[in-house]
Structures are given as structure tokens and as C-alpha cells.
Image (cartoon, rainbow, N blue to C red; front, side, top):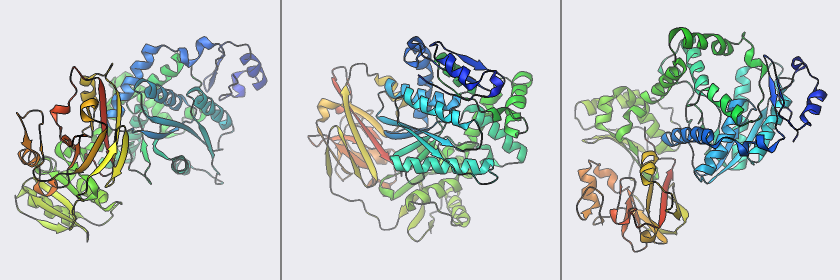
Length: 517
């Protein structure tokens, strides 16, 4: 196996010497203050034979993070791999995650060649080798540099190239390898420059979709040292960018001088604390109204509960703007301060307020909270049926079903990590056909927590669910037309998994206009 990484003459060896040494078949390690090379020829050093316990520990931590923030869904995922230890570790972790949790994802490795540094070609070789190791297609994009390329230009050009590549490959997700250290450095830089709450948010865990592609940072829960150790233990090829040691760059000075000083002289765990601060700032203006705030289906209705708005009035503006953008299907830049102030006053004073946010969207205060809805919108009444396993797209929602044996399935672990839009059922009881429609008067089911049958509308009333929104709640029916799941509230206990369950039906609802904010 031929592997060229980030080599410099300061390694003390010529390129030819290094290649000849690599042919000996043993692991060679060339290092100095700036860069190093790893390679493996002996099969015992190959990542396939790495220490499984260490790998599974890291992958489980990765799994918890991506499930908590709902970062990954089935489909094509583009991995941005620079060749450094963080991105190489990310690619390997994704591959192990796919195997361990049997995810229906297809990985692509993309390397952006900036043609700025003379040794950047070796970074490309490492990225290509990483793609081979995880058996993923490899794509390289070459950027044309301006006469005086800046860091801002490189960042914007890199992201544009990634999104263009994702669109070409049909990838719904682009993953970058930003870590908790990167997050801490970003927060410190913004504090030094002077920033508000938005600046303290640092690097977003998940960015708004661009033409259907979402940018995610699934490694923000990891320290760089963890990932470096991971690549070392698993003998993964990595390249080191020599410019990362240039202390004339502010970020490098913070990384190599300030943060170590904070960790040793002031408070151990400073990086984790700064990372938590960034996440808290990200959620403070939107997700702090999360507990009961739901967007509903078909781009038609949105509810922001009264108690959430009373507890977090400073989050109202962003919450309403986000809801409005989803209902309109695009980012809204209209001045909404006056309308939001009227709505907030109506909530705080228990007064009924109705105001037009746009020509099509109305905001109205109700006893339950604030409802945003499209004027004169009615749900379709026709039912739709699809086979299991399979999927169907209706009203801007994708319903995906799969079946698998119950052997080894842990219901308790599933409940700990699942979102409200994923449920599991006894596949044999549910049947091979699922019907989907909106709720109707007279629909009845048997939810957990209630003895016997109850009307679905009565259940929603007792749950404090607004009357205006009840007609937009989807219901899934089994093959014999019995209620299976009132999405996303409760399943019918007659189809729940039990000790006699042999096969499991998993149903996931995916929708760009379903958000918790």
C-alpha cells in the first residue's frame, strides 16, 4: 500500500528515502515539530483489526450526540475530509457507526484542494487513502485561487464547493469535523473581538438547509486529543498542516498558548465549559421554548405554547421568525418587531390578538399559546396506502418503514434515544400495509396511560392541544384499518412490542417543516 502524507524536508529524509522505507512492510513514523507520516502494510496494523472496545466506546458517544441533536438521517452523506486527524477520525467513526447501528446511509468522502500550501497534495493523498479504508467513493474539488487568498475566501469557497458536490451526488447531509476545541477557540475569538449572544453561539451543531442539504458538525462533543488518540490506536493515516503551528495566527495562539494556560492554571475542563456555553447560547433564543413547541405538517400550522413564551419572552422573536420561514418555505427578512411585540403583549395580558405577518400567514393568540397558520388552508381528506417495508411522501412529509427481527433489540435503549417522530411496533400485528390520513371525527384508539378506548380528539383536548391544529394531525392505520399511531403523540398499545414479538416494524416521519424550537 502506497501512502504519502504531509512531508517536508525538515523530516530529515528525502521523499525517495521515505518511499523506500515504506516498502519494508513495517509501520514507519516520521515526525518532528511540524508534521508526521503513518503507514501500514502489515495486516495486523490495519484498522480492521483495531481494538473493538475503544472503537465502540467512541462510536456510542458519537451515536448519543447525533441522536440528541437529530443530525443524521438515512441517505447519502458527504464527509469533508481534509486529511487531518479530526476529519480522518470522523470518516472512520462514521463507517463504524454505520455498521454498529445498521444505518441505511451511503458515505462519500470529499477533499477540497485549495492549492495554497505547497504540501497540500499530500493532504489529498491522505484523504484518498481514508476513502479507500472505509470503502467510500472519493471526490476531490480543486479551487482556483485569487491573487491574494484570504482565510474568509478559503472558508466560503470550501463550503460552496461542498454544497455543490453534495447537490451533484444527491447528499442530504454534509458533515464537517469541527471539535469542542474548535468551538472553544471560536467563542474566545468572538469574545475578544466583542460579541453579542449570537456570537457566543460559536459553531452551530446544525445549520439551516441549503437547497435541501444540511450542514452538521457531529464531532463537537469530542476533544481533539480524543480524536488524535483514536487515530493513533487505530493506526489511521493522518497529515498535519504546518500552518497550524504558526503563532502569528490568532486561532493558533489561542490553541497552543491560551487554552493550555486556562486548563493548567485556571480551570481544568475550560474547553468543555466554553463548548457548553456555545450550545447554551444556540438554544437560548429558540430551543429554550422547546418542551412543547411544535411545528406541524404540510407547511400549514404552527403552535408556540403559552407557558414557554411566558418563561422565555426573549426567545419569542426568533421563534416566530423561524416558524414564519418554515411556513413560507423561505427565509423571511421582513421587520416583525411590532407584530411580535403585539403578540407577546397579548400572551402576557391574556388578550386575543390576531395580526397578519405576511399576506398569507396570520398569527393569533389563543388560550394555548400563539398559532401561526396559512389563511384558508384545509387538510386533504383522501387516505394513502403504502407497503411495508417501504416509504411514501405526502404533504411534504416522508414516511419511512422498515422491518427486522426482534433478536437483540433493546426497547429500553430505543426509548432513551428516539425522537417523537420514530416509533416501533409489532410487525406481525400491524400487517404489510399502512394507511395514512389526517384525523377525522370519531377516530378512536387505545393509548398507554388510559384504560380502554378513547376518542382521539378527546385525547388531544385533554392534552391541551389547540382545536385549530387538530385537523392537521396525521394518523397511521394498520392493515385492518385500526389506529396504529397518532403522530407524533401516542401509539395504540394493541400494536406495541411485547415478549412474544418476533418481528419489529420501525416507522420514521421525516419532514423539513417539523421542528422543535
